[in-house]
Length: 139
Image (tube, rainbow, N blue to C red; front, side):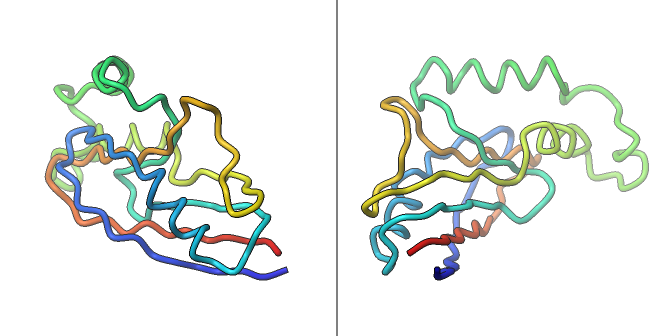
């Protein structure tokens, strides 16, 4: 059993920017010495999250609209009163989504559904330079 940790820099636009990172993660697995195992993808920071979707134009509109219903940008959050940074909604959205995702891989290939891609969603109220941590465990 081995553990390999890689870092992937990602520039985002913020405001529920959805970025397909499937190929980035696939490259880390393919370039590793491991054939079978699991990969955990983690985004450091409290205003972004990771999940899977079918990365297509309809969902790229639907998902931000859904988040706007759950945690709207235009209401007052206690966080905003505390820090005056206006991104309380981003923290709530990121907490609902979660900061990591785990996917199994076999023969250096992720086991994903046909229409399933791994995405980073940056909710912050400004562009950010994010760092993804991909940690793979296997043999």
